[in-house]
Length: 311
Image 1 (cartoon, rainbow, N blue to C red):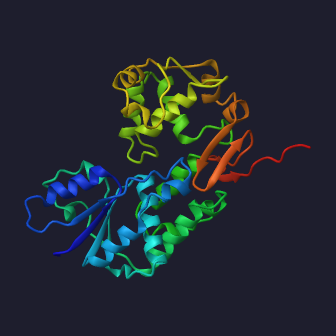
Image 2: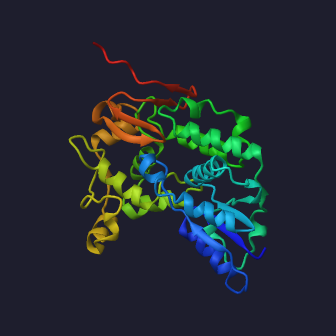
Image 3: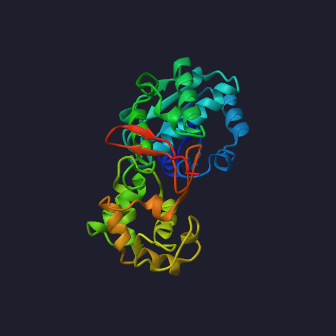
């Protein structure tokens, strides 16, 4: 195809496509969309998506391929893109999905995309499923996400795992920890004591929920406040701070971490972190706030609504 338009979920995937096509005279147009849709307010993040530009390039191309990574953020971004294209009335039959079993940025440039994943043509059923999934995630409570049917999820190869992973990132019924907090505390408790080690644990996960900037901010949050869960962190950095001060980042990255008494108590289920520290973070379109919030019981596989305040 002489005029191919490729969309990717991050810059590393774009790098793979560019490197693979570099010897060719016919190079596709490549647009990377590194939006973060997990644990962040959706409205300002989705606003970064330049719909007009993407749709204009789709209209000008003979075909479009979306290179989809298996992690939950990339799965959500795919559903957002398909939802927007459908809402704009575009001919989505020219869109094909390449569902990578591994991150596309990890594929060697000499390996043809077809050897990793054949393109799947988008049909109306895919668009309807994507719209239902994105709408459920962006809803003000997690009830719609929980109610998504297996038949809807099955239109995309790893969406069921995304469904599971995101429910597990809600505050858990017995500890109040989301999956990301639990992984950090568990890793520190098992001897993964440096910030660099924690980042490595997330990086090695086949379906990581958050990237390095969010890991940095989460570690700072867990070490702060009147009731910290971890100790030994050198400094406090936000999502973008580690790129601005190399010395501060080196000190932060090499911190020797440990669990506080509260951190150990929460990890074994003796204390509830939401009841002790409160919560203020986003899960899709749901704002988790205060000392009562939506929770997920991973044993009974049920959602628990916020407890009503006693009057």
